[in-house]
Amino acid sequence: MQDGYSFKIIDETRVPLSAGVADYSGIATVIVLISILLALCVMYLVWFRGHKKRIAELCVMGIDGDIDMGGMDSVSIFHPIKTMRFENELENQVVSGTAKGV
Image (cartoon, rainbow, N blue to C red; front, side):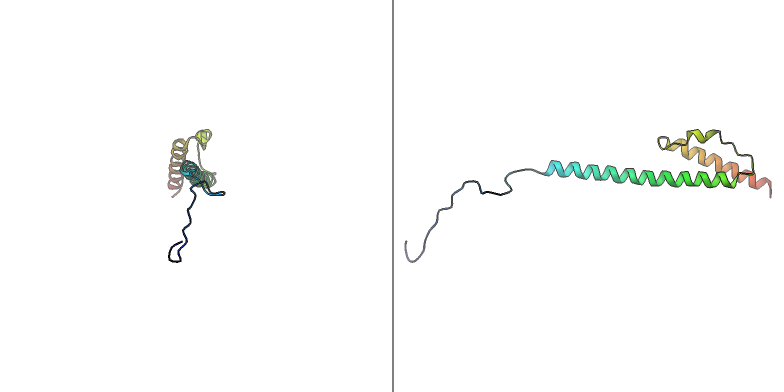
């Protein structure tokens, strides 16, 4: 001891309960990617449900007209382009059916 100072030597061994050198960036990346995928799936389901609801509304609107329901079997969650095509065709049929009555 000199001049009232005491020196302590810090041992460079592992500290219990320390975080260590673990790298959590891989796990964080996987969690973020799964979250994004889940959000995209939910958005797609909401989008598809809206189109399915519109198809049901068009079917009710044209129930007394001459509506061809042959494309209804192509309406599927796995075939969004066919679903949109059927919706457009159905909308055109309903509009042409109501235009005849005017």
